[in-house]
Image (cartoon, rainbow, N blue to C red; front, side, top):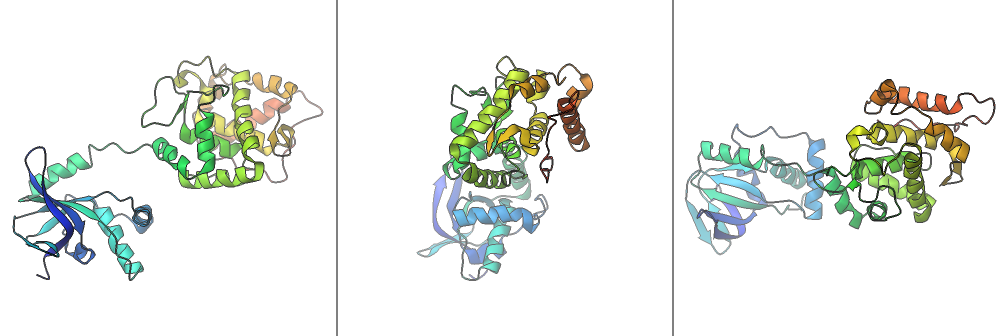
Length: 344
């Protein structure tokens, strides 16, 4: 009995295809008994598994998929006991995370649901592994960000801003799995640009959406909700004034709406005091006219930089600053004592 895999709160079920399966929760003590065939991916590093561990703490881990190479089991009042070898088909990283929790948190027992298929063999398991993994669509970061609006106020503010008909990007920001032709930027880009615009006020630069959301939340705590929202509206109104947003039919034809260009332009504004009255973004008419003349679409070299990364962003940054300062003896851009690094 000690080598049997125990399933708690389990019951037999029948799929639409007529297959008899077992659904339940795998006993934590049975996790080490699960076997791994060579069709599986390797166990990922602990840094990658950390997010799965967080999912256990939040109670949001989906069931794993198991295959028992045989049909021998025993049902008792305390649960089902699987007596043939059981292999992990889908969920190796979740099992690894669960075992890590048990090692690090002595008394904490992870709750991990499982679906068990009977009478499997390696070929069947391999085919199902492909269906569940290779053909699976990865969840968009925009959907994850949309769902964060219930927990992070600044994300909810941006989400609601996109529904505001006075916002030039009303109906043009993608918060879904796939971008529609009419949508110009992603929700993640909107958050990144908002952070870069305010990076002199707080932590506006990060690579992960959780960190971006947390940083933007801190910034909004310093500016206030109304000023933060108004600054984002003012920034995109500037882009619309200078080059036109509402006239764009699709993003591919407008280099100035690409993520790299928006990030660089937001950083230029953040880095210079000329554009700010305390924490409020304020762009005087002469500066708007000067920025409007920047050849973002007419110069092929500049247009090519708008979708580039790395050093190209530094070049684009210097071109924008140089253009704004050109022909001026006075009232040139005044950089902050410590300039904000250009986000990658």
